Length: 465
Image (cartoon, rainbow, N blue to C red; front, side, top):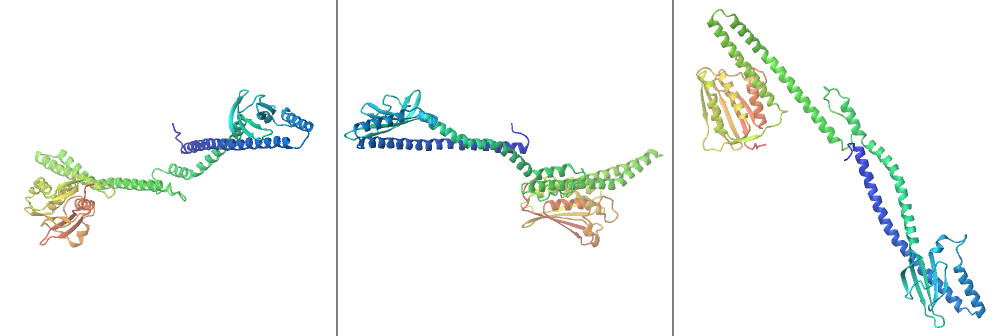
């Protein structure tokens, strides 16, 4: 299981990588050193054999009398047969020489066998002597007067010892250096992660209500995306908190009066002296409850349509069919004031539109409710649907008391009320939000002869999300 610490995990990974590479380098060095040492030792064997061959030929070819020749040969043989002393080297016992004349060994070193240690074939060969493997090199001299064979041998473990020493001398500094390197790496990683520790310190030291952006001093490129993401999150959190606070403030502002009115009507109903007075008070109480319900519903809708809230899934709808369906549902509201609702649209056109689920219902409900509220009894509200090249255009026209030109721009402001009609002043604000979320435009105009005309343009290019 990997450690949870980034420092420990990185250090472990680097050390494992380093040890793997060191082992690989050691293995390659071992193979390469073995090959090179074999080449050098083979060359030395061949060179020693040629040197010994030259010495023997020199002794034989020198014009000496028989007595001098015999004495020189005995001295040469004695030198080779002399045991290793304090002036020698311990590896002398691992190197052997032989000079053979026919099948007779005439000169040999102390470490060589008394019998011929190699065949008369020229070149390298192997033999086993005294439980050790030997590498031999043989030279053959074809002098007519004195043909002889020179064999030089070397124990194979000499080469192995040298290879081991080369590899060990290469690896020991690395093995000693790994703990030192681990310490240096630990320090370097801690230094490299210091900006992350600074970020942690800044976050831990913050008060819960401090949503200001985090600012690191010269943040590294790896931490910049994290800092930006955190700052975005803080900004969105601040927006959400502000939205909630605004919703609470709006609710408190708008519900204070309706709740007070409900309390008055409830008290009147309790204190009524007759049944008719009690019914009248309860009727007024019911109307006040309806108004409070409507205000709460509109406030929640407005909060859901806040610019900071992400878009919901858009669905494909038949704009004409859905508009007709909504008008049918809203007809009872209009009939309370005996208002006629009419819709004009080209049946032959394609009315496929992409609208956030449920938003067309909210849009039409607020438009029609607003038009009914400001229309006189037995009035007329007209709806027009136009299918233009790039837009769908929805127009709602009423013939009520109308709005002053100076008030038109303020009608979509939250809680703005025109005239003396009751309401929270949220209907057209909701309509504006829905239109903007669908990349559309909202236009308010005075109706000729009195009243208000609301025109909404929705682009056809809106796609489902």
